[in-house]
Image (cartoon, rainbow over all chains, first blue to last red; front, side, top):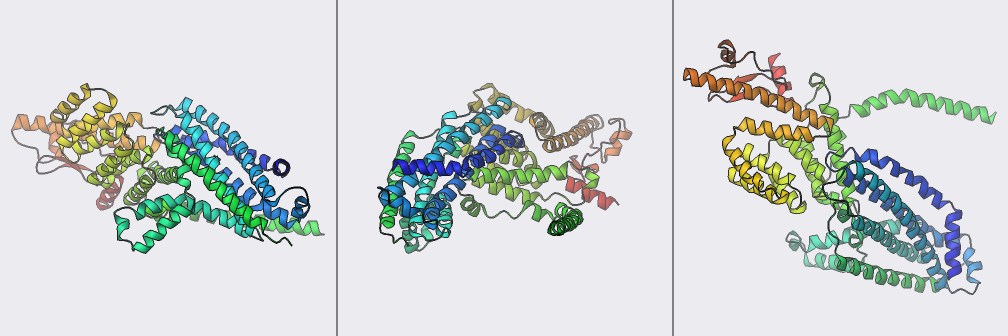
Length: 263
Length: 291
């Protein structure tokens, strides 16, 4: 499996994805001047923009690397040669996933450092009302990376059943959008106004809430931007949720991929 | 041959593009207000649409309003052909604050601009009190609300409660008694002048600063007339009927100038008012009527 991880990482670097990230990261240079447009929260706006930029780049990486990696192998018939090696199909799939996940962590670390530099620079010129919560900022970037790794697991799951790249790409985008809204829908359905909805609809919403990923748990942007305290227990629970959920999705993907007929 | 053909096509397309650019830019620049500000979906919908980028969406919506206001307000008042659409700005800011209830720019803009022009004071204070639930550390929100209660709504008890909160948050107990005494002793116009001076000092955005300075100038003119009116009444036992009387009797050196373009006048009870109602839109209407 280690060799698959290595091949995946090499492939990503060979495709000049990292250079692409560095080019996109040039946008960080514009953040200090854009942030001064704010009337009352320049540093907070610089954190918002930095975190959004990191998040956006990681989303693109998760969708495109996760959605095309397996599909490309199958399309170019690389899988035949790879699977003739002493590697199980599950091992191959996990290796691909782990390679992309490691790359995402690496990208998050590099982009995170850039974000921290930008925030340090802006907060030096425009001190915020409350000191910048550096811990929350690092946690926000770290949990963002975990969120997109979970999204990669979904991209791999879709790739394991799909014959084209449409399902992996668009399915992953759909999961990203739905996963960001599940908590809000659940909260709405269980609020006073939600009680007027038909009971079947409320039950369906609850079932979907438990079945679909809950990305809101990984969203610590508001804590990082406005220096709100981060609940340690929440981080632990979210970490556990990530491990269990992503393992489940990957095992399901491996089960499907192992039984798949390769033509 | 092929190269020449491509070169010719590119040159033709570039010429067409340049010819299109002027009318296209003019069209985009003069787009109607509603289209420029955009139709912001209901806050609940916006919340779902913004996925994990709520703070970014809210900040960009607020920035849109501030840029629109800045573009409008930094113009010469005579150049403004259409008054700023304050209700649309207000709706947009409210939607942004529903998406990110922590966004200070939204509350600041609502207090600095909208509360004066939209004149929905209760809604403005409801918004500030909603913000206080989130920005629990921030003393400026109760400070804004305290001013609104005292100045616009004349609810001095509520105003005192807000200043109490300011004192608790700043740890400055002296400001409670000061604020209380001030509210009782100071006249309405002086209260506004003190508040506006403080706001103008802290304003970073040039359009907002200009907005405060114009309002401040108007209130200073009002205060001059009020002082002259009070001296007139104390010495002659009756209120003057017109501001011109104050000038003629030497209580005022010259007629006050309304920076919004209206004309000051005295109401029956002696209140100093202006035909512009202290707004650019009002000044515009007053000028049209005058013509």
